[in-house]
Length: 79
Image 1 (cartoon, rainbow, N blue to C red):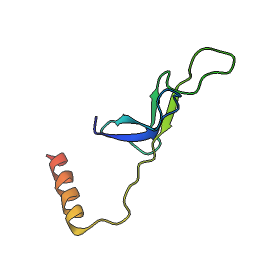
Image 2: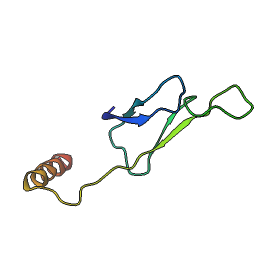
Image 3: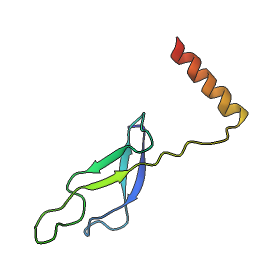
């Protein structure tokens, strides 16, 4: 995993936030599903899935150092 984010839990037994892994290469609009960790179905004794839509923030302005690092990364990918 590239990193983790915290999201609100939908489980009555877990209050607060839970950690969710985010894979490298995640794009805006990607979806992460926590199987069986969603809301309890009405008139059923099972839970649905907790579906998380990821909104990846891409910076509009970069510092000179950030731009240089991105150029170095692009050059390394060309090799």
